[in-house]
Length: 324
Image (cartoon, rainbow, N blue to C red; front, side, top):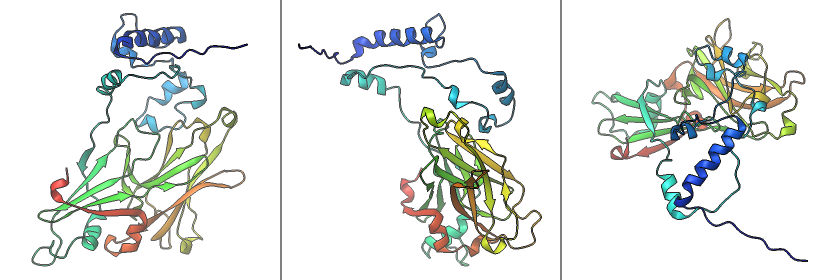
């Protein structure tokens, strides 16, 4: 006995109408998708009915950071298709409307910027009295759609007539259920970035830990995976209690979890809190540490050492003409 296997031809621009029709038919059969007038903008949207709990959670400020707003286990594929080869002409047609947004920058006040510029800039980038020139500090913003992977904070520090510095945050990368972790002050939800990452002042009034979860297999999400996030003070302050969040289920976190601690780090403390802290995700019952990373707290930014800065950041000198 024998058999013959046929291979479908490559898709081209001539097939675009057929592709749209197939997508329309799939959405109609699945109960999602476009309205009956065939508006092409509707093809880019997928709708589903929200639950009462979800609608209640969305009546808030910053509701997209609420961990329980959406149960990831209820997710279903919006469109499924077999792989087909695509002709170059169709690929160019499709790429014309799909591109990454350009990187945007905004001016910020970063307390660590003068210290970094003092350590890395050349000696002639000072005023006659030896003081640092006026600095312009900008921070990048990331694509707000990119929530599944970390956005590294990148600062641009400039002084007139001198080389500019790029300062890039080092992200904690690990393995297991949490594959990346960031910590810092000033979480900027619209820009997907921490405005003061990794090294912060004792005056910080809000600290956020950003946890990125791995893709789960179906059998991994049938139960619960409860964790709490803790802030542990330096070793010399081990007698002091840290701060901890409420427990939450990692299995219902679709991409990332943002856990914020409000209030000053020195509230109610008698011993020094300057030094290296630890943020960690802990399994509540057995106290197993799922993921952790350090961050540093200072009282005076000008006392932060060069080695400490390099522990948490990468530093590059760039030509001022090449900066945005």
